Length: 143
Image (cartoon, rainbow, N blue to C red):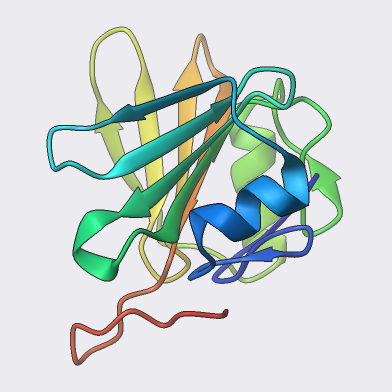
Protein backbone atom coordinates (compact mmCIF):
# COMPACT_ATOMS: atom_id res chain seq x y z
CA UNK A 1 0.00 0.00 0.00
CA UNK A 2 1.37 3.38 -1.00
CA UNK A 3 -0.22 6.45 0.59
CA UNK A 4 -0.07 9.53 -1.61
CA UNK A 5 -0.36 12.77 0.31
CA UNK A 6 -3.22 14.97 -0.93
CA UNK A 7 -4.34 12.19 -3.31
CA UNK A 8 -5.25 8.84 -1.70
CA UNK A 9 -3.55 5.44 -1.87
CA UNK A 10 -2.41 3.13 -4.65
CA UNK A 11 -4.92 3.76 -7.48
CA UNK A 12 -7.66 5.02 -5.16
CA UNK A 13 -8.17 8.79 -5.15
CA UNK A 14 -9.98 11.15 -2.82
CA UNK A 15 -13.47 11.71 -4.18
CA UNK A 16 -14.23 8.22 -5.46
CA UNK A 17 -17.47 6.49 -4.52
CA UNK A 18 -18.19 3.54 -2.25
CA UNK A 19 -19.12 1.49 -5.33
CA UNK A 20 -15.75 2.26 -6.90
CA UNK A 21 -13.96 1.14 -3.72
CA UNK A 22 -15.91 -2.12 -3.56
CA UNK A 23 -15.04 -2.87 -7.19
CA UNK A 24 -11.37 -1.98 -6.63
CA UNK A 25 -10.61 -3.64 -3.28
CA UNK A 26 -13.72 -5.63 -2.43
CA UNK A 27 -16.45 -5.51 0.17
CA UNK A 28 -15.35 -4.23 3.58
CA UNK A 29 -15.30 -6.45 6.66
CA UNK A 30 -17.35 -3.88 8.53
CA UNK A 31 -19.46 -0.84 7.59
CA UNK A 32 -20.52 1.69 10.20
CA UNK A 33 -21.36 5.36 10.66
CA UNK A 34 -19.67 7.96 12.81
CA UNK A 35 -21.46 10.66 14.83
CA UNK A 36 -21.75 12.85 11.70
CA UNK A 37 -23.37 10.02 9.70
CA UNK A 38 -20.31 9.58 7.51
CA UNK A 39 -19.89 6.00 6.24
CA UNK A 40 -16.81 4.07 7.30
CA UNK A 41 -15.48 1.00 5.52
CA UNK A 42 -13.17 -1.16 7.60
CA UNK A 43 -10.83 -3.68 5.95
CA UNK A 44 -9.31 -5.95 8.59
CA UNK A 45 -6.62 -7.70 6.54
CA UNK A 46 -5.33 -4.37 5.17
CA UNK A 47 -5.67 -2.61 8.56
CA UNK A 48 -7.48 0.13 6.70
CA UNK A 49 -10.49 2.36 7.37
CA UNK A 50 -11.96 4.57 4.65
CA UNK A 51 -14.35 7.42 5.45
CA UNK A 52 -16.92 8.71 2.98
CA UNK A 53 -18.29 12.14 3.94
CA UNK A 54 -22.08 12.40 3.96
CA UNK A 55 -21.97 16.16 3.25
CA UNK A 56 -19.98 15.43 0.07
CA UNK A 57 -22.31 12.78 -1.33
CA UNK A 58 -20.42 9.93 0.33
CA UNK A 59 -17.16 10.51 -1.53
CA UNK A 60 -13.89 9.13 -0.12
CA UNK A 61 -12.40 11.87 2.06
CA UNK A 62 -10.30 10.23 4.78
CA UNK A 63 -7.97 7.24 5.10
CA UNK A 64 -6.64 5.62 8.29
CA UNK A 65 -4.20 2.74 8.31
CA UNK A 66 -1.93 0.84 10.65
CA UNK A 67 -0.69 -1.48 7.89
CA UNK A 68 3.01 -2.18 8.49
CA UNK A 69 3.62 -2.49 4.73
CA UNK A 70 2.23 0.98 4.01
CA UNK A 71 4.68 3.46 2.52
CA UNK A 72 4.70 7.24 2.23
CA UNK A 73 7.27 8.84 -0.07
CA UNK A 74 9.04 5.49 -0.39
CA UNK A 75 9.38 4.82 3.34
CA UNK A 76 7.58 2.48 5.70
CA UNK A 77 6.76 4.36 8.91
CA UNK A 78 4.42 2.16 10.95
CA UNK A 79 6.42 0.79 13.87
CA UNK A 80 9.14 3.43 13.49
CA UNK A 81 10.39 5.84 16.14
CA UNK A 82 8.56 9.17 15.88
CA UNK A 83 11.76 11.23 15.94
CA UNK A 84 13.17 9.29 12.97
CA UNK A 85 9.86 9.69 11.11
CA UNK A 86 9.75 13.45 11.75
CA UNK A 87 13.37 13.72 10.56
CA UNK A 88 12.41 11.81 7.40
CA UNK A 89 9.50 14.16 6.67
CA UNK A 90 11.71 17.17 7.36
CA UNK A 91 14.17 15.84 4.75
CA UNK A 92 11.22 15.88 2.31
CA UNK A 93 10.33 19.49 3.30
CA UNK A 94 7.25 18.40 5.23
CA UNK A 95 7.51 20.25 8.50
CA UNK A 96 5.37 22.22 10.92
CA UNK A 97 3.75 19.31 12.71
CA UNK A 98 1.33 20.30 15.46
CA UNK A 99 1.84 18.12 18.54
CA UNK A 100 -1.01 17.05 20.82
CA UNK A 101 -0.73 14.87 23.92
CA UNK A 102 -3.72 12.71 24.89
CA UNK A 103 -2.03 10.99 27.84
CA UNK A 104 -2.04 7.44 26.46
CA UNK A 105 -1.13 8.50 22.90
CA UNK A 106 0.13 11.50 20.96
CA UNK A 107 -0.59 12.97 17.54
CA UNK A 108 1.51 14.94 15.09
CA UNK A 109 -0.52 16.78 12.45
CA UNK A 110 0.70 18.50 9.31
CA UNK A 111 -2.26 20.47 7.99
CA UNK A 112 -0.62 21.43 4.66
CA UNK A 113 -0.77 17.76 3.65
CA UNK A 114 -3.59 16.76 6.02
CA UNK A 115 -1.34 14.10 7.48
CA UNK A 116 -1.75 12.77 11.03
CA UNK A 117 0.73 10.48 12.76
CA UNK A 118 -0.67 8.64 15.78
CA UNK A 119 1.99 7.59 18.26
CA UNK A 120 2.07 5.26 21.26
CA UNK A 121 5.20 4.57 23.30
CA UNK A 122 7.23 6.79 20.97
CA UNK A 123 6.37 4.68 17.91
CA UNK A 124 4.08 5.53 14.97
CA UNK A 125 1.19 3.07 15.08
CA UNK A 126 -1.32 4.67 12.70
CA UNK A 127 -1.32 7.16 9.83
CA UNK A 128 -4.27 9.23 8.66
CA UNK A 129 -4.54 11.33 5.50
CA UNK A 130 -7.45 13.40 4.34
CA UNK A 131 -8.64 15.32 1.33
CA UNK A 132 -7.32 18.87 1.23
CA UNK A 133 -9.72 21.76 1.83
CA UNK A 134 -8.57 24.87 0.00
CA UNK A 135 -8.73 28.53 1.06
CA UNK A 136 -12.28 28.76 -0.35
CA UNK A 137 -13.42 25.92 1.95
CA UNK A 138 -13.80 23.59 -1.03
CA UNK A 139 -12.59 20.01 -1.21
CA UNK A 140 -9.78 19.38 -3.67
CA UNK A 141 -11.08 16.10 -5.07
CA UNK A 142 -8.68 14.01 -7.14
CA UNK A 143 -11.30 11.71 -8.67
